[in-house]
Length: 274
Image (cartoon, rainbow, N blue to C red; front, side):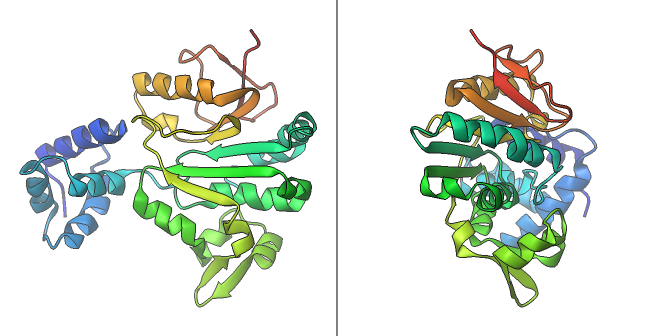
C-alpha cells in the first residue's frame, strides 16, 4: 500500500524531530514496509489512517512506536570482519597491558539493534581474552527501540541470522538449537547489559569508555547531530580509548579531536594527544 507525499513528509519530519534521523526522498518504500505493520498493530487498515491518528494527537507512545519502526535495524554477527580482527590483534592486547593494574574494561556498542554486535564482542573476549572474565568488565549495548532491545536481550536468532558472519565453531559452542531458531547461551547473554539511548537526546549517565562501537550510525544523521554525538563521545572516551566507526563514516570536518588509525580498513579512531 503506497504512502502519499504529504504523509511521507510528515513521517520524515517526525523521525527527524524525535530521533535526529534523516529519511531521504526515495525511501517511501521503506516507510511503506515499516508502517503498514505498525498500522495493523493499532487496528488500522492503512498508512493513511495511521498518519491521520498521529496528526490528531500530541506526541505520545504511538509516535514513539512509529519512530522506532522507522529506525534502521541492519546488523549481523562480526559485521565487516576487519574491525573485529583489529580488536583482537591490536586494540585489546594493548588495553589489557594498559589496564592490568586496575583490571577494569568498559565497552559500549551504540545503536546495537538486535544484539549481534555486542554478542560478537562478548564471544570474541571469551575465545581470545578469557582472563578478562575475572576483571570488572562491562559491555553496554544501546538502541533507540525498546522493542528491538527486548529481542536483543532474548538472544534468540533465526537460521538466516546465524548464517550471516557467525563462525560455525562459535555456533556450536555458544548456541543451542531450539526449534527453528538458535538460542545464545546464558554465559554470553549475561556479559551484555542493554539500555535504551536516543543518541540525539540527552544521554543517561554512562561510565568512561575504553572502546566505543558506533558503526554505521552517523551516516543517518545530519551534520549538526553528527557533531553533537561526536562531542559527547569525545568526553566519554578515555584518553587512550578507541572509537570504531563504519567504513563510510569519518570524523573529518566534524570533530578534529579524533585521529584515524593508520591501519588499513580499520574505521578506528583515537583522541589526538594534547
